Image (cartoon, one colour):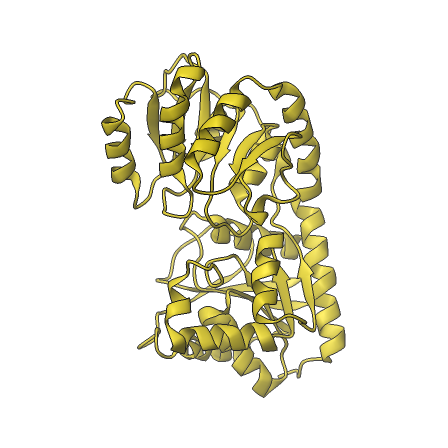
Length: 373
């Protein structure tokens, strides 16, 4: 297959969508398919085993998001594709769908969550939301990365022609590689780990508040927050106001060895997310064999089951979260961790990619061949 992976965000930014897009493109190439990533942004020099093309932000993108389709049309004219695989309905999915309908190339849309979240600003922008709704009702194929995303898609399109639930994947072997303690982190205490972008949907403010409530039941257990983002300063103020400066430590953004070390050496993970697509951090905790305390958001379904390899509480319920943190600190973490590691094998990237390829092949066969140019 000749695939254009059309995305509004990509490397070198580090986020779930960027990581998934990169790994999928690598896997497609490794399995013998031709893939080109067409990404919005300034041209970057990236050492990747597949080509990347760039397009700039169009004029009035909030009013006419379909204008990004001009870059896709130009690329398709230069090197025709069999299928457009798009991250999100807005702006890429809608633009690809309009182009594809004219030239006979099927469009498959993958939602990573942001365009469909109930908290999304786009729902309050009628000119954007109607395009999102149109895209999810008319795309040739839809991929939901978690039960929660499938639920949101079906709220818009109750009976999609082709919809497949394919979760994100993880490189289990890479996360299992030995890691050494970061030179700038010398905390001798056991710790629970919050890992991810410090944004409003992660619920880390609830994590800090719950930790403060449970602190007296946690013996010497500290909390470490690894990541960066817009809420870092407010979180630091929250920690200081609660008198937790010696107990809650901010380690900043970490990658590679440092990230693996924090994952491998925490007692358990803490992920009280408000809204998620299919959190990579959840897969990372699985891969290193850790249980988690997480929210009941369906994005975690399949990865984590309460009392088996997790404790799950409703998002924003700080009292319940405090109780779960205290209970987990006294739980059978070894047994729960074994179950987490066992489940990680269901999310290896080669297996996940095979599911993508099978679904994309079905979309192609049922949509008819695209015209050769």
